[in-house]
Length: 89
Image (cartoon, rainbow, N blue to C red; front, side, top):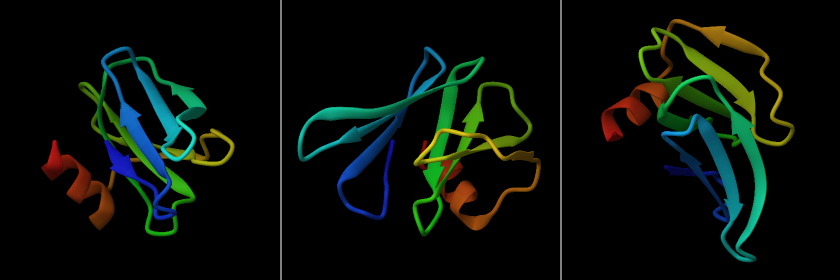
């Protein structure tokens, strides 16, 4: 679980392969992203525009847009914010 820098949106990864974004002020579901395996780690970029998602058994991280859910790329190198996410789980 992580927060977007807006301080209003919480991001949660689940055993069902879903990443959900919730607006904590309203309690409403903002978006659901679906992955093929259990989500183990999720981290937000410093500007909140991208999410790094690691699934069970993955040797790379998927990136997803926090606003649209689109997935621009998969990378095998971890950035500092991804590493922090991995350590927090």
